Image (cartoon, rainbow, N blue to C red; front, side, top):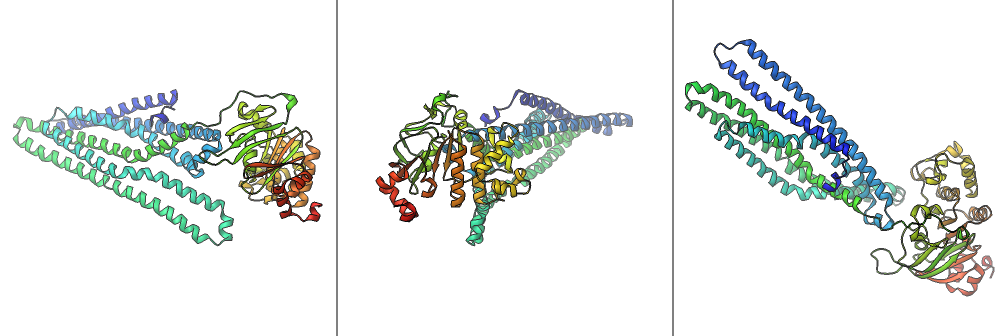
Length: 586
C-alpha cells in the first residue's frame, strides 16, 4: 500500500497537512459543544439563572457548530480534489507503464485485467483517499480526545465505554475475518466479467453467425452470478455492522443513564446537579467515541477491497519491461535499409520448444524479401523480431549493421513501417489514421497522405467516402471493409517514409487485381525501401527478389520463385496446392 502512496507529491502532502489542521480544528469545535451543553444544563437547573446567560452560551454553541460545519466542508473539498488529482496521475502512470510493456508483459496481464486495474482499481484508491481525509484522520483524533475528556469524570462510565469499544472491535474483527478473502476475489471476478463482456462485443459477428447468443448469455450469466454471489456474501457479513453498532450504542446510552441514576441517588444533595450535568456530557462524549469507531468501520469495510486494488496497481507499476533501450540512435548511412539475421533461434517466454532455429539471411537495401511456409512455421514470429517486439533467444538481428538490441526502441521503430496481420484502425478520420503517431509531427502533410493512400490503392474508396480524407473512421474501422482497412494500414506504413516496410500477411483481404496493382505501385514508388513480406499466397510473393521458405521454424529454402520451384520441395508443394501447372508455367 505504501508503494502507491509514495507517489504523493509535495503539493499532495501539503494538502494532507492542511486537511489535518482543519480536522483538528473541527474535532476541537465538536468536543467543545458538550461543554456548552453542560453549562446550559447547569444554568437551567440553578435557581435564579438569567435567560440572557443561557442565550449567550447558546450563541457560542451555535458559532461552534457553524465553524465545525465550515471546517468539514473545507476538509471534504480538499479530500475530493486530492483524490481526483492523485487518481488522474495514477491512471496516467499505469497507462504509460503499459505502453512500455513488451508482448511478454502484456501476455502476463490479460487485456480485461489491465482495463479493470486502470479504471475500477484506481477508483477504489480514489474513494479511500477522499474518505480517509474526512474519516480516517478525524475518527482516531476524536476518539482519543473524547476519551481524554471523560476519563476523569467517573470510572464506572469509563469502564462501560471501554467495554462498548471492545465489543465493537470484536464485531469488526469477526466480520472482517469472514469478508477479507471474499473481498480479494471481487476484483478477480470483475476481471473475468470484463473479459467475457469484451469477448462478446468484439466477436459479435461470429456470435450471431453461429446463433450463439444463448451460449454467450449463459457464459455471461455464470460470470455475473459468481461475482454477484461473492459480493452478496460480503455484503451480508457487512450488514451485521450497522445493527450491531446501533445495539452497542443504544446499550451504552442505556448503561450510562442506568449508572447515572444510581450515582445521582447516592450523591449528596449539593452534588446531585453536578452528577446530572456530568451524565449529560458523558453521554454526548461517549456517543462521539462510538461514532468515531463507526466512521472507522466505513474505512474497514472499504480497506480489504482497496488493499487488493492497490496490490494489483502495484503489480502493473512495478513490472519492468524486459526489453531495455540501447544507446544507438543513428546507424551508418551507407547501410540504410539492410536487415540481417545471424543464426537466429527463438522461443517464446516460458515455452520449451523453439519456434525458430538457426535462421540466417540478409535483405539488402531496396530488396523485396518474402517469407512463406505452412501455418505455424514461424513466419510472423520471424518478422516480429525486426521491430523488436521480442528479443531473440540466440543469434542476432541487425538493422543497418547494428544489433536491434543496441538501438533505442524509438530510433529502431522510426526506421520501420509496420503493417500487422490484423489491420488496426483508430477512432478519428482517414487522415488521422494514415498520419498516425510520431510520424505525423502535429499537422499531417496532406500531399504525403494523398501519396500514401494512392500507393496503397485506397484513393478510389477514400474519394468516394463522405468527406474524403476527413471521412470519419469508427472504432476499429467498423464502418469500412476488411480490404479497405488493410489498405489504410498499408498507407499508414508508407506515409512515414521508412527504410524498411514489414508486411505481416497484410494482403490477405485484397483481391488478386488490387494485390498485384498495390505491389507494383510499391515497387515503383518506394525505390530504395526494403520490403519484408509474409504471405500465404504464391501470387503475392512470386515476383519478390528473394523468397525465404520456412518449415517448422527451419529455413529450408531461399531464392527466387523459379529457383525454389526447381530446388525446394516444400515450396513446390505449397505452389501446387494453390496454382495449376499452367499458372505456374511448369
